[in-house]
Every structure is written in structure tokens, then in C-alpha cells.
Amino acid sequence: MRDLDYYIPAGALFLALLSKAPALLRRRNPMVTAMAGLIFTACAGYVFAAPPTIRALNHGTGVANVSAPLVYVILSAFNASCIALLVYWREGTGRTARRRARRWLAACAVVTCLIPLLFALGDAPVERLRDFDTHYANTPFIREMIIVYLGWHILVGAVLPFLCWRWSREVGGWVKAGLRTLVAGFVLNVVFGLTKGTAVVARWAGGDLDPLSSYIAPPAASVGALLTTLGFLLPQGERLAAHWQTWRLYRQLGPLHRDLGPLAPDAGSPRLPLLALGARLSNRECDVYDRLFALAPYCDPYVLAAARAEARQAGEDPEAASALAAATMIADAIEASRDRPDRPDLLDESAQAAGLEALGPVIATGAEGMARVAAHYTALSRRTNREPARVRTHQPSAAPPTTPEPLLRKTHP
Image 1 (cartoon, rainbow, N blue to C red):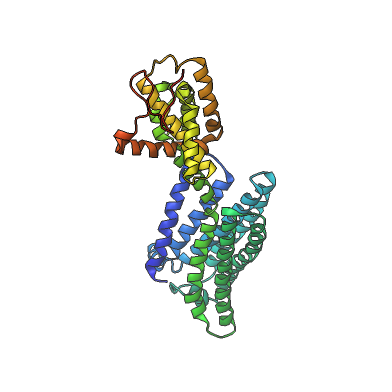
Image 2: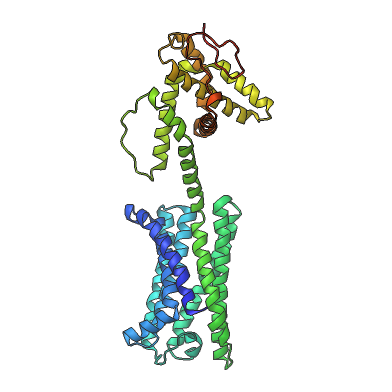
């Protein structure tokens, strides 16, 4: 890897960490904390493993190779965060899961204490930016530090892929994709540890396989860390998809909500934050239903039936035909409410009952069905604006039209 290549994934991970900051500050959740720790350690690992950072840190502290134990500690903490997050992910955040996660974190704490201690006891006076492990493979205490670090790394990388693969066979969707991605990431972490370990063992035997450690292991670790972080983030795609679906429904209901506005005044509900999508959709959906009830006396079942029959003849499936027919009836009723708001024959009890009966199946479809109706209503409104001479379905006078058409409203007796 080139020197600057380390900072590109670090920047991407930093942005992912910022996206988790609100949840981290808002509530104390072990899963959120473990996820933030994983992203932070992955980001820090890229930054402090970059040769420019190693050089600057070594020269800034005046201690040759001080970056080596620091990177080892960061990557050990990354492995511990992976284990803790996987435990919380699989078992929840109950007492048993927390106890199991604490055991792994305690083991990681032992490793992270041993690494700087062994480095302090050893002697590594010559700065090595890329081949520290193999150069000091036979140095007392430094050798033990390398063994502790690589042993922990290989152990975690060997255990977790089996757990993730077994669990991925029990789930589906985004979670399964995330687990399969984790398997690939952990396997690459094992490749990193084994290639480093092979090069170190070769030094013990008097051989030289340093390219394995200097040129093969770093890219494997880099891609492995990215895949591991991505694997834990992928299940969030399900939540993002749900947010997108909520926003789509909210936007689709917008034109119908606006045009129904004069029929029922707002209840003065408090303004909601922009990101409170679920609450905003619920409020808009309730407003639409309330205004449709007010529109009921103007809703004509004959218009609904004629529009559905015409849509079916045009080849629409039953669901699409029903949504289009409902949108046509609602558009017709809104036009009627504008033209003749005080017509007594539209506002009597029979008209109210007939309108509610026609609206019942529409309202029963819920937010998804109402959004489909609203989408058809928006398309009809746009067509109306483009063709003003063809859209008026009501006569301004009290006399009924002389030539009724299939979608024209029938006047009540």
C-alpha cells in the first residue's frame, strides 16, 4: 500500500463514526458503544499504521518504534470491539451477554497491558517503518510482544468466522449479508496474522520471508478491517430502507394532504423535527383520513365504480385499478366541494353514508394503500393542469349534464 492509501479508509470510517455520534450521546447503549468503539479503533488503526504517521510519532516522542506497540494495542482493541459487538448483536444487551462481553474485554485488557510492558522491557533502537516484526523477531521481549499480539489476532480471527457463518444460516436479508461480509473480513484478518507469523517464524529459523510481512500482510489487514466494519454496518441498511420507505410515503401523501386542507382545519399539532419521519407520517396520515371523512358527502360511488371498470378494461391489475378509481373519485369530490360547497343534496345523510361506504376500502388499505391512491391523485392533478378544458367533472349550474360520461359525477336526486 502507498503511504497515503491508509488515510482514505480512515476518512470514510471517521464519517461513519460521526453518523453514530448522536446515538452515542443520546443514550447509553452497550451495542451503540461497541459499534462506536469498533469504528473508532478501525479508523485509528489506519491512521497510526500509515508510515507518515509512524515517522511523525516516533520523531515527535523521541522514542524509536513507539508506534509499533500503539498500533498493536489499537488493533487488539478493534478485535475486542468486534467480539463484544457480535455478542450484543446475537444475544442482546442483557446481563448474560454483558458478562460474556466483559470476559472478552478483560482478555483484551491483559493483551493491551502486556504489549507496552514487553516493549518497554525490550530494546528496539533502530526505526523500522515497514518491517518491525521481522527485524526484531529475535530480540528479547520484543519477540514476546509480537507473539502476544499475533496470537491474539489469529485467535479472534479464527473463532469469529465460524460463529458468523453458523449464525448467517439462521437469518436472512441485511443481517445475513452483514454476517457473510464479516466472515470475509475475519478470514482476511487471519491471513494477515498467518503471513506475519510465517515471516517471523522464518526469521527464527534463519530464513528470510520478510516480503510476506511487509507487502502481503498490510493489504490483507486493510481490506479485512474495512470488510469487518462494513459487515457490522450493513444491517443498518434495513433501518435506512425503512426510513426511506417512510419518507417516500410522506412525500406521496403531500399533494393530496394539501388539496384536502380546506375541508378540515389543522388541529394545531406541534411542529416535529425534520428527522422524526415516523411521527410526521403518522400526523399526515391522520390529517388525510380526517379530511377524507369531511369529503365523504361529495364522494360518488358511481364515479368510483365507473373509474374502476375503465381501469380494468385498460388492462390494470385489480390493486392498481382500485387505487386509480379511488384517486379519481377523490379528485372528483374535491372539485365538487370547491364548486358547490353548500349544495344540500350533497350534504344530506344519505350522501354522507354513501361516501363513507365508498371511502371505507380506501382507508382500510393503510398508509401504503393511501400512498398509492395519493400517487394516482397527483398524476391526475398534473394531467388536469396540462389539459384544463377536459378536467371539469361538475357543471357550475344546478342542472345535471345532458350527456353523462363514465367518469362524470351523477347528481343526487
